[in-house]
Amino acid sequence: MSGFALDRVFRAASGRIVAALAVRFRDLSLAEDAFSESCLRAMGAWPQSGVPADPAAWLYRAAERIALDALRRQRTRERLRPEPPPGGPNAEDLLIEDASIMPDERLRLIFICCHPAVAPDSRAALTLRLVCGLTVSEIARAFLVQETTLAQRLVRAKHKITEAGVPFELPPPQYWSDRLEAVLVTLEIAYSKAHEDGGATGRHAGFAAEVLRLTRLLAELMPESAEVHALAALVRYAEARRPARLDKDGVMVPLSEQNPAIWRRDFIADADLFLAKADESSGEGRVIQARLQRAWSKRHSLKESPPWAEVLALYDQLLLVRDDVVVRLNRAVAVAEIDGPDAALHEIDRLSNPSLAGFLPYHAVRADLLRRSGQSEKARTAYLEALALDPSRAERLWLERTMSSLPPA
Image (cartoon, rainbow, N blue to C red; front, top):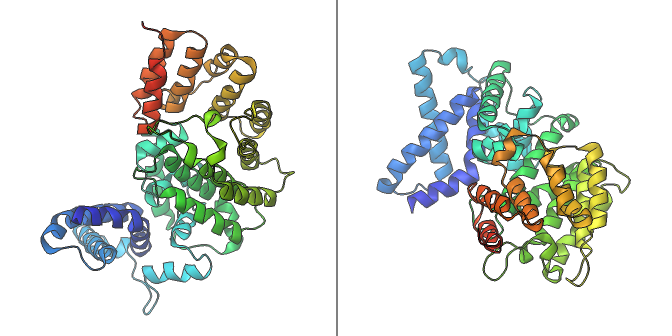
């Protein structure tokens, strides 16, 4: 029971605890190390003494003592940990005061961690690691970079925060726009981790409800941002399809084969409202992505043909503002339906990114295209490459089922 309690408090409070420690000691690495050590001590202490009444407070106080001991051993406490002014607010008070500006703890922490002093390509990654608890491997796959590259970025980001003396405090609203893109990327990737889990049973399943809630709040706080409203629409269109994403055996159902009759129409209606507020004339990337999702949501039954022509046209628009391998990979799926699998294979064989070797959707799409073009042995190899990348249970079952339809070798 103590292990379950520790896991629960880690998910709920790790970001808040690390942020509070960082505010107090002005050293992000020290905060992370102390919190990790406090978790290890909890694993040893709680089975004997029982789970404390306030597990988060126990972990914070333990981490605080660990950090102070580390500073004493290094004989640098006075240099690394300036004392707060007499009678001034403590770390927890600073975070609580931010609630008057942004009334949600996790969203405040995301904005705090997306500090402009951190390199743009590292802000969302650092936030996903600290606030959302994603592993370095998960974040590297999301950004399509090598794991070692991502780890180096995180180290540099933490050093920059320490060297610049960055305060872990929420900036005034007029400075939020400087951090907004990193915040949106963080929410996007957090939701994608939940969306990968069609059965909503994995450790990131809770991100779905959390991102739905946070995007609504963010849209209220920043009502003029088309990108914010577009992201709110995007996640609702995607979440609307959850009831149709698995068949009765728990196997993933591709989007074009899902039964639209059981999609959540309340989520779709909500998404339509957010997209309307995003400004229909906008050509920003997330707005176009939301229009892509809306194109699918217009279907009400399997009797209606999938909107492949509209989808391909929207992907062509999206390439003008966001030309990357993920967009081109998704576009190739539509190309296969309009121009055939060989044309789509030609498109994805032109993609160039070393990290595609570890990107499961690339191998899954390529395997399906090879199967449809009659290249059975190459398709089998691609399916095995996809299966080697540890897909979720639902996706693994779909890959295995589809691979089994190939003619014998």
